Length: 56
Image (cartoon, rainbow, N blue to C red; front, side):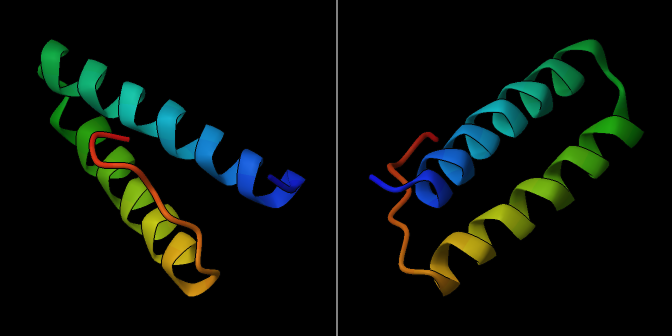
């Protein structure tokens, strides 16, 4: 796994964790921000052929 792929997958995991935390605490604004970031990261992964495991 190259550094780009590892970094991207790490960012996806971190953002997913932050999104979960925002939802659990009821911070709707932060949840929206984290969801948008996660969507962008998934789009970037798809554009570069990086497979993201379900639940990541």
